[in-house]
Structure formats: structure tokens, C-alpha cells
Image (cartoon, rainbow, N blue to C red):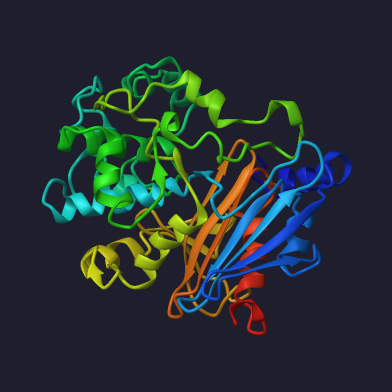
Length: 399
């Protein structure tokens, strides 16, 4: 995945030379008017899908009055059909859900943002280790001092506990409360913490606190994901059609999330959400309505303020981006005169996004089975281009 300007330039050159060209067909669904319309591949986002080599996906737009979803299906081999029922691996959009779950437990008094992670989680870290000062709030905004290392994925794949990562002799940790460093491990440990304080499995807690109240068709448990409707994922560069990530293959290697195991369940809360576009729109609707869903208070104003306030900055590499609690905050006049809040997700080649525009409440959800992973700073280029198209003043897609 390209992370520097030089790597992005080389990656984009590689796309021109080696990425597959995509032939797709688009269908537009207007839910408020119960319409299904075929679209030209040249319609609005279709050009962007092609430019970014998107291997099937969906774009949902919702302004609270008109709910439109554009489904783009790959016509060439291997064919990939996308409908409103299609399920996607949402990747790091999971972090937004994890933050919501944590704030729900904070409101119930089971957690506090100032709690130290390792006061509630057992660890072999020595008593004077700096990481022992890392708090829930710092993990939620990537300022915990934790870092992602090769040991993280290796330990999770082997079924080892998180101490195999924390005590890795090659790891270089930061100082809690210090610089912003995006970290999957930090959110994974929040999942372990959720299990530790509730005594329940992650899947059960997320279902009770998030999925059911927000009417989301969603799961963290790959063994429960819809095998028929979950879209495969492929990298577009290097592209290997026969090596796509498939939910059925992942499910065969996984253990069901049926009982709590905080030591070993640190790999779920950062990126293991399986859901559809409409479900993510429900989550964004709650955010856009300041914590209210279906006319019922779901998160308090205090929780909403904590989540949407900038706690960290991406710095010079992405000056338009900051981070709240589990939320990416975008301040970019080239995209919108208002703040855009939400999250993006990269995994196995997909480049997803779920965002809402502050003030108007307009929501944009992009999910796919693979696309160009090129970035502008830290924002995926496909997400940036979709947001710029969606929020432009003369866009008639909202009418």
C-alpha cells in the first residue's frame, strides 16, 4: 500500500501499466421513489470507478429525503454482481463502530475515557513500562504509544495472546499521549477491553450495543458473514484474479466468536466488520443527527462532542486531516466548505469510505471489492474524488 509521495507516484505508474481495465454495468436504486434505473458507465461516479479500477462496488447517497444507491457490477471475468444486499468487509470503518461501542459502555459506567488499558487488561509488561499509562481515550485517537508491528498479525494468526505483541523485543513503542500514529493494535486492545469489562464475547456486545439499536445487518464474526452475498476482494495492483480474498476461505480458518477471550480477541475491533451500505448509512444517520436515531437518544451530546472533537492531527503529511475518537475529520475546502466526518477502510485491496457532511447531514458510503490504493496524503484518492463529486454544489444526484 503506497504511503509516501514517491511510493504513490510509482504505484500510479504501475496502475497505468499493469492494473486491469474494468468493464462494469451500473444500476441506480432510488429508495424513496422505489425506482430501479440502468445507468450509463459514463454517469458521474462511473467515470471515477473506472479511473480508480474499481472491481465492483456500491455508492450510497442519502440526504434524509432521497436515498440513492448506485451498484456497479464487473462484467468481465471473473464477473462480480453487486446489489443493495451485497455484504462487504468494511475494514477500518470498524473503528468507528468500536468507538461507538466504547462510548456506549462509558455512558453505562462500565468504562471511563481516562481508564488505563492495562489496569483493566492483564499483561506481562513490567510495572514501570511506559505503555502501562496508555488510556482508553488515547487508544481511540491513536495517541496511546502503541505501534503496529509484524508481530501483531503474526500473533493473531497463530492464536497467541496480545502479550506476544507487547513484549516483542523488536517493537519500538512511543509515549502515551504523544504523537499521533495510526494503530490497529490500539483498537484491537479496545476490543479486548470490551470483553474484559462486560464478561461477554465481542459479537454479543456489539450486537446489543450497536447492531440491533441501529438496525444494522452486521457482524464481526467471519463465520457468521453471508457467504452467498459477501463480495470477494482483490488487489488491482498487482492483480491476481485467482488469489482473491473470499469470505468462505476466511471462515474455514476462523473460530466462531461465541465466548469471550480478551487475550486472543485483539484482532477484531480494528477491521473485522462485515456489513452492507444501508447499515453503514444507519450509523452515519445517527452521527448526522447528533446521537439521535429513530427519534430516540442513542449517544449523549457529551459523547458526540468527545467523538467529533479533534484529538490529534495527521501533521504535514495530511494537513487537511485530523482524528477524533474513532472518527476521521476532514477539513478540505476543495471537497466541501464544511467538515466531513467518518472513516475509510483498506484491506486486501478494497478502499472503502463512510462519511457525512457536518451541517447538511448528507451521507456518502463507498464499498468495493478492490480499487486503486493510491492516496493523497492519507486519504484514498478514490474516496477523495467521490467526496469531491458528491458534495459539489451543482451535483443533481441529491435531487
